[in-house]
Length: 330
Image (tube, rainbow, N blue to C red):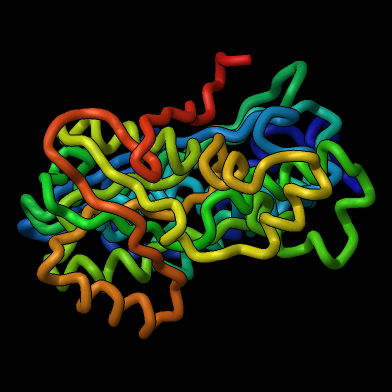
């Protein structure tokens, strides 16, 4: 199996570019010094970037190359979902050791390409570099949105209802099971939690549908944890929130994981967790429309509180703060 040091940079790049395929809106794609893109008339660009570092964001034994690519793409797509933006183009940068297998690199890119293609986006350029130490992958994703129509964190207002998609805390539960139980986390009972961590799905389809309803005043993607990201939303909007944690969808999987880990289920659901779900501030008059959209595309959605005048978040009437994930924290 050839490794990157065997084939060299130029051949690796040639193989990468040859397997990407065309993309709409691309005047000039991979192979030149930069890409030339043509945004649609009357649209604004929405740009995000995210990185994955070996040992920090993925464990090689638990996430094969194609899965790493899909996960990196999903993390970026989740940011665009939180802005109600349509994914269009991506720049992929990679730092690998010389012994990295060429086929593993192509598998990784395939995971990115297929995940992006499913929502209409494609890779239009990037960079490949040799490194020493932990390997890393970085994706910059560019989307489009109608002028002035992007969701932001700052649009929530007192009286808005709080909604969240999916099951917050599943990703944290899956990762902690892997770290604590090792191979024991491969048991079938833990598969949905491990998948929530290793193979998240961005809510692009839901965001597309909800954008048409005009019901969402603000949004944030749930990449650091339910409590931490809700604090970010409140701070950006200049409002507070009252949370009814009992209104969150019951999750027997997290309850079972909490017992196995000797942790509180509530802590797992609130604390640091890269679930890549969405927290939404919803116009109360349009709650039914939001629920109808979520049902139509089979996305779990729970209303779990409301925005209020003032500052801070209360959980069940009690002030509480749970920090989200911090790359430089303990």
